[in-house]
Each structure stands twice: as structure tokens, then as C-alpha cells.
Length: 147
Image 1: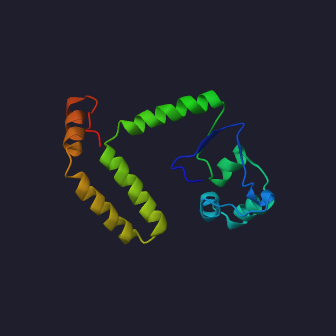
Image 2: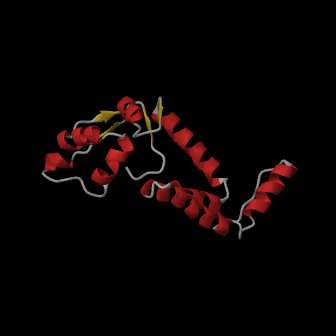
Image 3: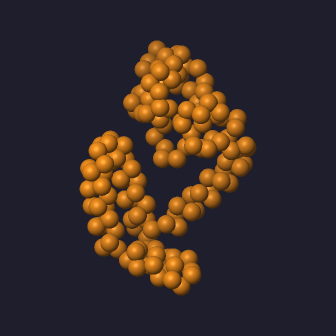
């Protein structure tokens, strides 16, 4: 539930099984699941019954954003996305993640814009913007400093 990007293979299934053990799910599952599936009713159904949710239902509910045909395709696509993200300016990626998390918990647009402005003021202290512009101008792959 706590992953930023959730993909699965077509044969995957997901389950909140703690109720079968006589426990309420912990580690944030019950707090996050309703927002992830977009329905308190579906979250309750899954958590109360411990019924498995297959890949197609997980995608339809928004729990995962992509279903790949095989585990191999999932691995290859996940690795390709990880490489694509890793090639981005690290301060911008961290700031974008922080802004998304902040906006999730603070739905007022003005608050989110203030938070993003704060992170962008930090990003402007790095050389990433200059490097991105130079790389575009010179038609080359940018090389960003590591954090």
C-alpha cells in the first residue's frame, strides 16, 4: 500500500488477511487502502472478508496503475521506469514526491503551491536547472550531481 508506483503482473492478487488471524491490519493498510481504491466500501469488503483482489480488479479500482502480462515483463518494465526516474534531477524528483505527499494530506491547492515553491527554491540552489537546459540545448543526456 505504501509504494509510490504500484504495478503488477496479470497473475497477481492482493489480500488484507489479518482479520483471519484475529487481528486488525496494521502498518497503515487500513489507513491507506480506502484512498488507494477510491471506495471505503471496497476497502471494508476486502479488510473484513480477507478476500483476494485480482490484478484486473486492482487496476479497475486504482490500487495498481498498470498490469503487465507476465512477471518478466513486469520486471523489465519496472527496471526501465526506475532507470528513467534515476536519470532525472534527484532534487526535483525528491521535491516532486514531497509535493505529491503534501498535497495528498493538504487538499487546498494554495497550500500545495506554497510547498512546491519551497522545494523549487531549494532546487534553484543546485546546478540541476542549468544542466538540464544545457543538455537540451546541446542535445545530450544530462548529468546531474548525486545527492
